[in-house]
Image (cartoon, rainbow, N blue to C red):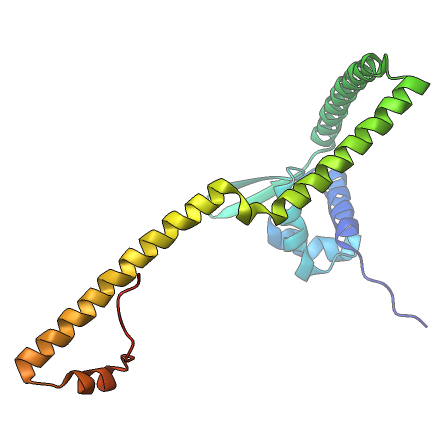
Length: 205
């Protein structure tokens, strides 16, 4: 014999709402945890979770009185809520229908003069060819970007700045070597060897 399937959350919510509607009374959580398992088959351990979900969705009202919290839900409120929801949906439907009608008008207006014809098809074909050619030229142009006069000018400027910077550091190295020789009497060859300075180290031309 197969094991009886437990109630889903939505089924528990429905049954707990039925309990409120049938009893038409106010309850504390502990009372519901005793009544719901017997009358609606909702496990006492899940009553709190189901109840909180209904309170969060404004389907069950709650009020703290002293140290106790009471919960209730009457059919009249549920009915009014459904009516309000139905009214809201009807307003949205009317608004959507008006928007669709306006869009249909826009489409009709935009379609005028765009009916299929030999001339229109020829122009569309030409436009497609021109667009494709433009893309090819843009791709080709990108290959030669580094040969662009403005780009070359920019590269020369960057090169000059880089050379000036390199020469400034070269000057700093020579000054430091000179200071070490005068201060400590080191040989220039020893300084070069110690700091890995190549023999042909010099200014850039």
